[in-house]
Image 1 (tube, helix red, strand yellow):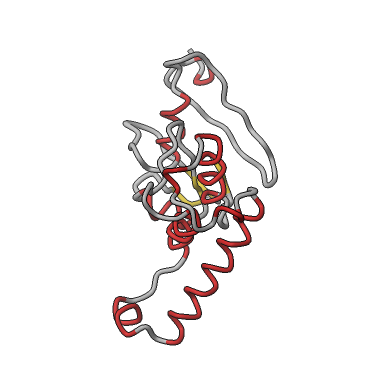
Image 2: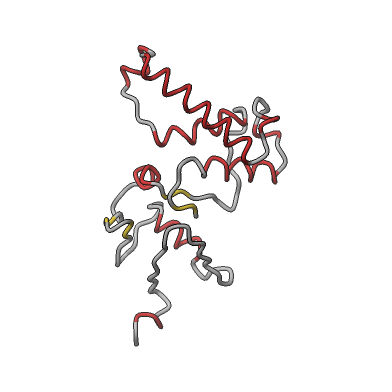
Length: 161
Protein backbone atom coordinates (compact mmCIF):
# COMPACT_ATOMS: atom_id res chain seq x y z
CA UNK A 1 0.00 0.00 0.00
CA UNK A 2 1.34 3.49 -0.87
CA UNK A 3 2.20 5.84 2.00
CA UNK A 4 -0.52 8.28 1.06
CA UNK A 5 -3.13 5.55 1.58
CA UNK A 6 -1.97 4.53 5.07
CA UNK A 7 -4.09 5.85 7.91
CA UNK A 8 -1.00 6.39 10.08
CA UNK A 9 1.06 8.36 7.54
CA UNK A 10 0.99 12.09 6.92
CA UNK A 11 3.09 14.34 4.76
CA UNK A 12 2.50 17.96 3.80
CA UNK A 13 4.36 21.16 3.06
CA UNK A 14 3.33 24.66 4.00
CA UNK A 15 4.42 27.63 1.92
CA UNK A 16 4.87 31.14 3.30
CA UNK A 17 1.59 33.06 3.74
CA UNK A 18 -0.40 29.91 2.93
CA UNK A 19 -3.45 28.86 4.91
CA UNK A 20 -3.74 25.11 5.18
CA UNK A 21 -6.65 23.24 6.72
CA UNK A 22 -6.63 19.84 8.34
CA UNK A 23 -10.14 18.45 8.51
CA UNK A 24 -11.62 15.23 9.74
CA UNK A 25 -14.07 13.73 12.20
CA UNK A 26 -13.51 13.56 15.95
CA UNK A 27 -10.71 11.13 16.70
CA UNK A 28 -9.12 11.42 13.26
CA UNK A 29 -5.86 12.82 14.69
CA UNK A 30 -6.03 16.55 13.97
CA UNK A 31 -4.93 17.54 17.48
CA UNK A 32 -2.31 14.80 17.41
CA UNK A 33 -0.81 16.35 14.28
CA UNK A 34 -0.59 19.73 16.04
CA UNK A 35 0.95 18.09 19.11
CA UNK A 36 3.54 16.31 16.93
CA UNK A 37 4.48 19.49 15.07
CA UNK A 38 4.82 21.52 18.28
CA UNK A 39 6.74 18.83 20.18
CA UNK A 40 4.10 18.11 22.83
CA UNK A 41 4.28 14.47 21.76
CA UNK A 42 7.02 12.66 19.89
CA UNK A 43 6.33 10.46 16.85
CA UNK A 44 7.03 6.74 17.02
CA UNK A 45 8.39 6.99 13.49
CA UNK A 46 9.02 9.67 10.93
CA UNK A 47 10.16 13.22 11.52
CA UNK A 48 9.00 16.82 11.67
CA UNK A 49 11.03 19.20 9.50
CA UNK A 50 10.85 22.99 9.65
CA UNK A 51 12.84 25.09 7.19
CA UNK A 52 15.01 22.10 6.34
CA UNK A 53 15.82 21.33 9.98
CA UNK A 54 14.68 18.16 11.74
CA UNK A 55 12.86 19.42 14.85
CA UNK A 56 11.43 16.07 15.96
CA UNK A 57 13.56 15.84 19.11
CA UNK A 58 13.19 19.48 20.18
CA UNK A 59 11.17 20.50 23.23
CA UNK A 60 7.97 22.56 22.76
CA UNK A 61 9.58 25.78 24.04
CA UNK A 62 12.44 25.48 21.53
CA UNK A 63 9.95 24.87 18.71
CA UNK A 64 7.91 27.90 19.81
CA UNK A 65 11.05 30.07 19.80
CA UNK A 66 11.65 28.94 16.21
CA UNK A 67 8.27 30.48 15.34
CA UNK A 68 5.81 27.56 15.45
CA UNK A 69 3.02 28.35 17.90
CA UNK A 70 -0.43 26.97 18.53
CA UNK A 71 -3.69 27.75 20.19
CA UNK A 72 -5.61 25.14 22.11
CA UNK A 73 -9.26 24.06 21.91
CA UNK A 74 -9.65 24.96 25.57
CA UNK A 75 -8.64 28.53 26.28
CA UNK A 76 -6.04 28.70 29.07
CA UNK A 77 -5.11 32.24 30.08
CA UNK A 78 -3.38 33.02 33.35
CA UNK A 79 -6.70 33.85 34.95
CA UNK A 80 -5.51 36.16 37.76
CA UNK A 81 -3.08 38.09 35.58
CA UNK A 82 -4.18 41.06 33.52
CA UNK A 83 -4.87 40.80 29.82
CA UNK A 84 -1.69 42.80 29.14
CA UNK A 85 0.39 40.58 31.44
CA UNK A 86 -0.87 37.48 29.61
CA UNK A 87 0.42 38.85 26.31
CA UNK A 88 3.71 39.87 27.91
CA UNK A 89 4.21 36.30 29.16
CA UNK A 90 3.66 35.02 25.62
CA UNK A 91 6.23 37.51 24.31
CA UNK A 92 8.84 36.18 26.76
CA UNK A 93 9.28 33.13 24.51
CA UNK A 94 11.24 35.31 22.11
CA UNK A 95 13.53 36.89 24.70
CA UNK A 96 16.00 35.02 26.86
CA UNK A 97 17.65 37.35 29.35
CA UNK A 98 20.34 35.96 31.62
CA UNK A 99 19.47 35.55 35.29
CA UNK A 100 21.94 38.26 36.28
CA UNK A 101 20.27 40.73 33.87
CA UNK A 102 16.91 40.05 35.48
CA UNK A 103 18.17 40.20 39.08
CA UNK A 104 20.17 43.38 38.46
CA UNK A 105 17.55 44.98 36.23
CA UNK A 106 20.22 45.98 33.75
CA UNK A 107 19.43 48.78 31.27
CA UNK A 108 19.34 46.22 28.44
CA UNK A 109 16.86 44.06 30.31
CA UNK A 110 14.67 47.06 31.16
CA UNK A 111 14.68 48.18 27.50
CA UNK A 112 13.68 44.67 26.49
CA UNK A 113 10.80 44.69 29.00
CA UNK A 114 9.62 48.06 27.67
CA UNK A 115 9.69 46.69 24.13
CA UNK A 116 7.71 43.62 25.21
CA UNK A 117 5.08 45.83 26.85
CA UNK A 118 4.93 48.02 23.74
CA UNK A 119 4.51 44.98 21.44
CA UNK A 120 1.88 43.44 23.72
CA UNK A 121 -0.05 46.72 23.79
CA UNK A 122 0.00 46.86 19.97
CA UNK A 123 -1.32 43.31 19.74
CA UNK A 124 -4.10 44.13 22.20
CA UNK A 125 -5.20 46.80 19.74
CA UNK A 126 -4.97 44.28 16.90
CA UNK A 127 -7.31 41.81 18.62
CA UNK A 128 -9.64 44.52 19.96
CA UNK A 129 -8.82 44.18 23.65
CA UNK A 130 -6.83 47.35 24.34
CA UNK A 131 -9.56 48.82 26.57
CA UNK A 132 -9.31 45.70 28.76
CA UNK A 133 -5.52 45.70 29.21
CA UNK A 134 -5.67 45.91 33.02
CA UNK A 135 -8.63 43.55 33.48
CA UNK A 136 -8.02 40.06 34.92
CA UNK A 137 -8.02 37.60 32.04
CA UNK A 138 -10.24 35.19 33.94
CA UNK A 139 -13.07 37.71 33.96
CA UNK A 140 -13.23 37.92 30.15
CA UNK A 141 -15.92 36.14 28.18
CA UNK A 142 -14.86 32.94 26.42
CA UNK A 143 -14.77 34.76 23.07
CA UNK A 144 -12.53 37.50 24.46
CA UNK A 145 -10.27 34.91 26.09
CA UNK A 146 -9.96 33.23 22.68
CA UNK A 147 -8.96 36.57 21.10
CA UNK A 148 -6.40 37.02 23.89
CA UNK A 149 -4.98 33.57 23.21
CA UNK A 150 -4.77 34.26 19.48
CA UNK A 151 -3.12 37.61 20.23
CA UNK A 152 -0.53 35.83 22.38
CA UNK A 153 0.07 33.30 19.65
CA UNK A 154 0.56 36.02 17.06
CA UNK A 155 3.62 37.52 18.72
CA UNK A 156 6.13 36.89 15.94
CA UNK A 157 5.02 33.43 14.75
CA UNK A 158 6.09 31.97 11.46
CA UNK A 159 3.48 29.21 11.74
CA UNK A 160 0.25 29.50 13.74
CA UNK A 161 -1.60 26.25 14.39
